[in-house]
Length: 427
Ligand SMILES: [Zn+2]
Image 1: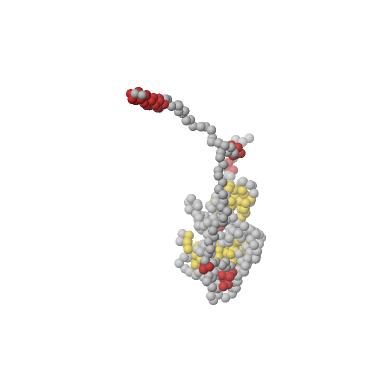
Image 2: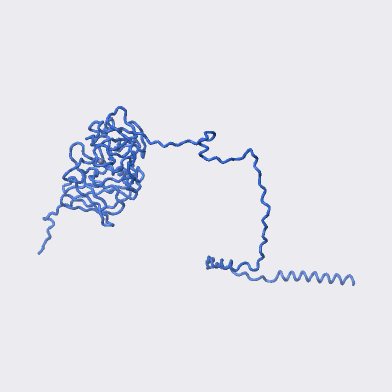
């Protein structure tokens, strides 16, 4: 074939291939569909997946199985020099060689008496029965949630919640007891009945100023001293408007502290007992204010305040305090007061207003509140406070908030003057 013809054929082929390639690239591509957001929720149908699994992978090729080697893995042989022989813990301790574990021997704190103080015999007794009464957890002191800063819930409860740290209701602070015909000594503290041996704790940080039988002190400190039995007094690190605050724990079976000893809030200082004048084992708890910070003799029987306005309430509870007066504005003593829940209609608490004997050793209204009654640990909510003022019933509505004092003044309404209230024109 002539050379020119071959070149022509080659040229035609090259052009044809080029043309085809050009045509393919110039051909319009398939139209791109707009991608719209699907409104369908991605499938969460478990059944769909399980159906796929049930169908199996019909056309798939099974994966090759890997044969497990029949020969066991080689074991390393430990040299004899590091062979370990297990030794029991008992052998370790008894052998005495090498490792020796410290032996923990629990010891009970031993009671102490101030040196040279005769009379009081304080012995350790264990709790005689398991607690049969459980209290809610108290709030954590110190707190003062009142927007005006009036509250001073600075003290812990002296007994744990898994014993009884509730206040005996029928002999509250300032009361002369439940029997009007046979009045008791006006109460200068609050009582928490407990089994003998129940731990008693310091209500706050401070220094022990007394730890012995109350009979060893001069009468001004523990008036009618035999009543107190074994008693501890703590002078706290804080004061109220510069006046030192003391707490007192009486009728103890044991004391673990000595005068001059520093204690921290919550520290076990003694045990519940029935020493002194008691009808049963309990701790009698007082809050006192120093009457003379400069002197050494600055807490007295007549300088107590109601502990329920100083000791933290339980979680979810507050305190109702108030003053009960007659129509002329005079304080009414020993007036029965009932706290009735507006939610349930049931009587939540009862108390009586303070009794003042004017004998120089009276109980005192709180320096802030000037109350003559206070009811602790009232669950938050709305209440009717019902006071019997001589032959009249006075009702007030209050709301209790957690950790707060709700204060109410109870007084009969002013006498209606017939001259001004006469309806004109009648008849
Ligand atoms: Zn008491």
